[in-house]
Image (cartoon, rainbow, N blue to C red):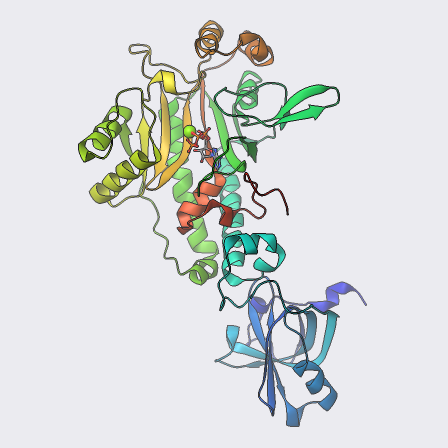
Length: 443
Ligand code: ATP
Ligand code: MG
C-alpha cells in the first residue's frame, strides 16, 4: 500500500456537511486517549489541528475498541473511517473508525508534555525540539514564521527584486566591529560571513538593479540577551538608483503587507497564541538621531552626547515615548553620525558628519539598519581607512566600484526580531527552530 493512502486529508480540511459517506484517512499523533468505559475518544493531532476519533463500545468491533483504549500518547497512527458532524468536537466532526493503524509507538514518559497543561523551561523545550514542535504554541509560531517569509518573498518579487544568494564562507570581515567566527578552509583561514552586505553591493555594479536575500548571518559576539543569536536570519535588500528614503518606504510598506498577510492567512495560529495583531500604520514616524537623543536626555535616566550609540535602555525610552505619543510601535531613526555607522554609509554632501542612514525600530528593539551607500571608489577607500580597516582586504569589493557602480541603497532586517516583536515573544530563541548561542550548539 502506498504511504499516501495513510492520509487523505488534514484534520482541518474536512467539511462535515459536504463529505457524506466518503471514507477518509487521517494521520498524525495520539494527542490524548479518554477512556470512559462505554465510549472511548482518541484525539488525533496533525500539523494543522486536531480531530476526535469516537469509538462506542456497543457499536464497534470489540478488538478495535480495546486496541484504541491502549494507544500510547504521541504514537503515530493512521485512522480510516467515516465522518459524522459533531458540533462539540474540534473542527465540527468526529471520525468513526473502521481501522486504526499503529505506525510507530512512542516511549513513555515523554520528555515534555505536549498538551500545554504543564509549562516547560525554554532549555528543556529546545533540547527536545522535535516534541516541543508538537505543542500548539510552538507549532503556531513556526507556521507564522513561514507566512512572514513567504509574504516577504511575495512582496519583494512583486516589487521587482530578484532573489539572490551570497557565500557564507568568506575571506574578509564585512565591516569590522563585529566579531567573526574563523574556520579552516583547506589550508587557509576563512570566516563565516556576518552579512551579505559587500556581495549585494557588487551585484549593483553587475546591473542586477534590485536584489534580495534571505539567509544566515553569523556574529561571534558573546551576547547573552533575549534578542541576540550567534546565527540569525537576515532579510536583506539592495536597490540601484534610489536613496535611503526610497528604501525606507519599501521597508515600511513591506512590514505593513506582511502583517496583513499573517492576519489573512494564519488567523488560527494567531488565535492559538491569543494575539490580535494590529497592522502598523504607514508611513512610520521618522525621528532624527538628534531628536532621539534629546528624548533620552529629557527623560533623565541617561545622559547621551552626540556621537554615542543608543543603549538598550535608551532604545526602550525612545520606543515608549513614541508609543505614548503616536500609539504606534514602529518608527525610524534617521541621519546618524557618520562615525558610528559602517564605512559604506553615504555622508550628506552638505553636512558630512551626518550619514544618509537609518534604523527601523520597534518599541522594544532595533529591527533593521540601512542607508544610501557610498558608490564613489575614492571616497569609499578613504572611509575604510578612516575606520582603521585595511583597504587591501577589500580589493574584491572595491574593484566593483571602479567600472561603473550606480548610486544605491539598501537595508538588512532581522527575521527573528521581526517575528518576535510581531508576536510579543519574550525570547528570540523561541522563534528559531535550532538556535545557536554561546552555550547552545546542539541540537
Ligand atoms: P544590535 O545593535 O541590536 O546588536 P546591529 O546594529 O549590530 O544590532 P546590524 O548589523 O545593523 O545589527 O544588522 C541588521 C539587523 O539584523 C539588526 O537590526 C537585527 O534585526 C538583525 N541582527 C543583527 N545581529 C543580530 C543578532 N546577533 N541576533 C539577531 N538578530 C540580529
Ligand atoms: Mg544596526
